[in-house]
Length: 391
Image 1 (cartoon, rainbow, N blue to C red):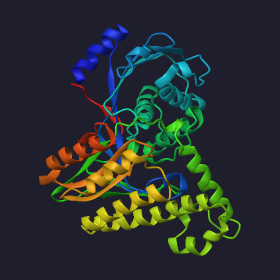
Image 2 (cartoon, rainbow, N blue to C red; image 1 turned 120 degrees about the vertical axis):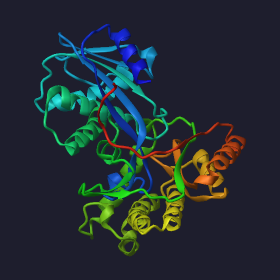
Image 3 (cartoon, rainbow, N blue to C red; image 1 turned 90 degrees about the vertical axis):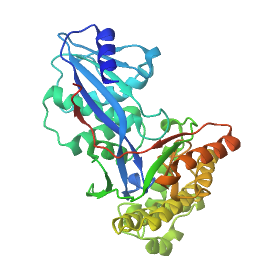
Image 4 (tube, rainbow, N blue to C red; image 1 turned 180 degrees about the horizontal axis):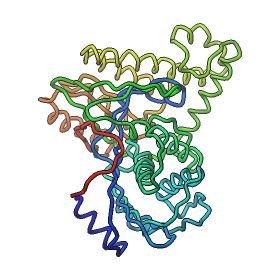
């Protein structure tokens, strides 16, 4: 594949300049959903598939961007002298352009242009963070090209800011953090309010993570993601009338129950309940994993899905069908939706000797109920964004 990408790069851009290659993974969140923008904890890990960016310098001021995944869009061309703005016709390229703007806004002027070829093997629209992967691979590449000295956390924050302000999606920091800071065979317990984090080994003994893609397309910016965020912000502001808290993540479930009456709207109250209880679940789940209690970790994953279904209402028929089918199979320790919801993926812990049967039976039941064909991936946990050697 790598040799093929090099050949494509030379063919598309017709250059003999030296080519450097960068990679940023996708991510899956094991537990802690919709807690990141609520100041709570998340527990994601980086995956071994993601986005490649092949970059070569130019001798002029042109910036040319091409995606193997969207060949019909063709080459997106702009100049280092352009005022960088979101343009609908730039399509997927708005994500890297937003990151380029983050660098130029901080005074890092692009002295020359460059060509970039992107290729991603993250399923589009699956909720495994293809957008954040594009952002981080661009940030790591620009860091090297411009010889800037931003920390990895700085690049994470810049990528999140690009998605918030340039793209217009009010995402939390989890996706970018997991992708920028990932570590092989480890997940990250991240406090999204303080950015304190710790790596936790993923030791599942004789089991593995299996990701199932509903193949129901979802677009984060067009979903009800921003609506859920607004509901939580409204609940927080009403709680703050009597409580000195910065986020819903500051509350224990007991404190929430004592003060939930302050939230005037029943729907807002349900949203806030999920954020508070999910945060507590996530902290407890990591403790259980570190103790080697995989069964309890799996049960907390199931509880997470129930809360996302009933209180946060972001699952939907397809995700619920996949989780129900998974939990009916032998060898399944836990299963839940992962990502923003409204389609996308589930993540399950499955005994290794049952994985083949799991994929066959869950896929069959899912197709019978939805008419859709699910894709399955046995997940390997990899490193975060970095430059790689293609030789």
